[in-house]
Image 1 (cartoon, rainbow, N blue to C red):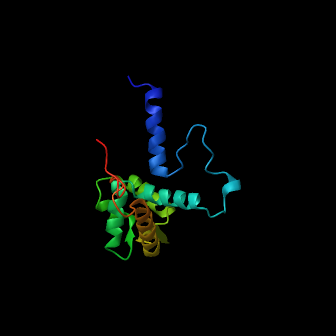
Image 2 (image 1 turned 90 degrees about the vertical axis):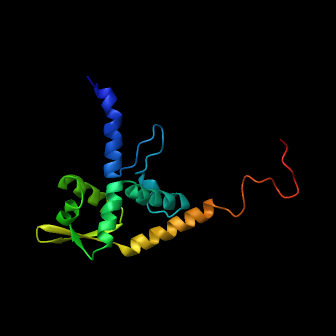
Image 3 (image 1 turned 90 degrees about the horizontal axis):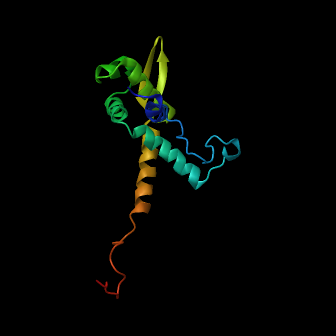
Length: 152
């Protein structure tokens, strides 16, 4: 028999990955602190980038983006037909992508049509390129400095 204490961490993780809410860190600062809102700092830029990357960190969401990339617009039912998931699950993934700004939605009668936000995708690509350019400095970081030999 599974106890509630064994299931609780999974439920929290599932809510975090599906809803994209900030994962609570014990003793950490509250991400929703209004005093921090509105300022553009490198830390907040990285937090926004992390949120968009977190939206991409699920294979279903990547598949949805690939589906939308091949079409001008797509309604939820068309996306569901291409995936082995329930409509409600796909709708939740679409919500995460919409909330992250990577896709846009428009109501057409009783249906909702989705499309890629190509400007947001292009901006994200630039941010990722800049991030990895900063992470990969020129040269070999493990090589000894010029003029010195490594002691073994």
